[in-house]
Length: 237
Image (cartoon, rainbow, N blue to C red; front, side, top):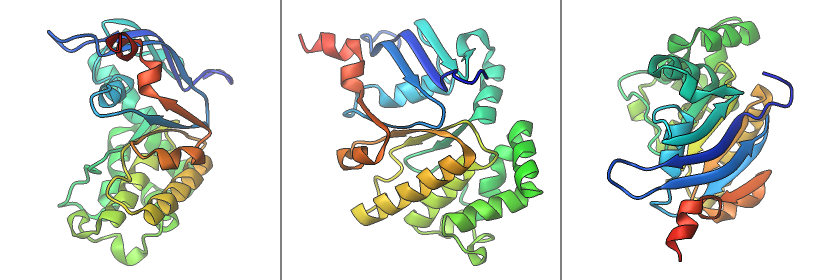
């Protein structure tokens, strides 16, 4: 990746689900390396669809989606899957942990699917296990919890495991989809500061999606998807 290549670059992106009205029409959007961006928008505004497009799960009807300079539409479905796991870490609203696996094994999952992240984790910490343990400790989960089944954790603990899983192997992009919605205000802000710290250590950009406007001042940039999306603006007239 060239020094000034954006992590995310969208140009004239248009997307509609089959037999439905145009959902996304974005002229231009970029996310720069190591930038923290807050993205808000009401339910139904296309936030989840946009994240699917950024992950290469769907492709737009027209326009360009580039991650780290790579046009996703130029890759096959399997290549997009590999590219996503190599370069992006996701923190989902429901965390999507595997409850029958231990905390440690949940965190290690991306390294099972990405040789690149496995290599990065090993180079930084000596082994993927040590990388996972270091992240868990930094996120406030003591060694006594590392072999606990993920399904036995509190919501706050599961959230931190999901963050460690997203961060292991230093992906260039971390995408967080409403990960603080189940937490109280104090816990939300404390978690965000931990997430910021770990993203900075990994030199990762952060795209954080939330309804909670009170968190926006903590970020480098804040964008309202309804203002970015020309399809939304057209529906208002």
